[in-house]
Amino acid sequence: SMSWLPGYGQRDVAGRLWLVSIPQWFDVPEFKAAFDQFLHPHQRGVLVYIPTAMQAPAHCNRDSQYREQAEIRRQRLGFTECVILDFETASIEDARMLLADAEIDCLYVEGGNTFALRHFARPFDSIIQRALKTRGMPLIGVSAGA
Image 1: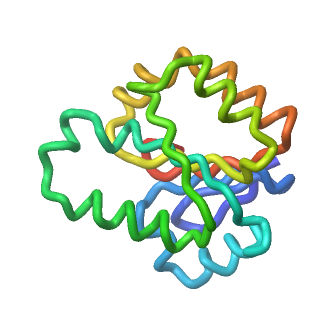
Image 2: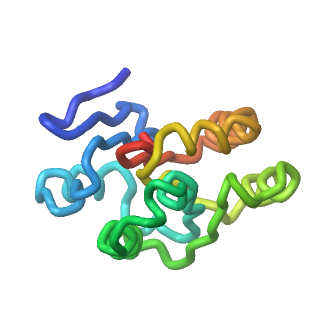
């Protein structure tokens, strides 16, 4: 079941899904505290970062402020390593092998263009779902990534 975080998004009570509607969520103290309960700092080893929505044409041409903020957000999560998985350029087999890696701790889907994200992500849906279900891997989705 889902619990609401007033004004911003929701998380599932089982602790595997973190969806937020605003990119600045990490600047809200209540969110930071809730996130630390959701994913304890000692669980933050390897992050799979999915920037596909942010790299869509409508977002590539805007000023670099959104990209800079996205990078700051990603770094503030506190993972020791980050592996990029861009649905636009990755192969299905590469994604399957990456998500089968026992070292992966979390998936993070960046915000941006919702339509581009769905267009490029659709072939990867079953692989992502399998990783989330079989490994109990948490997923963080921000804005379009939610």
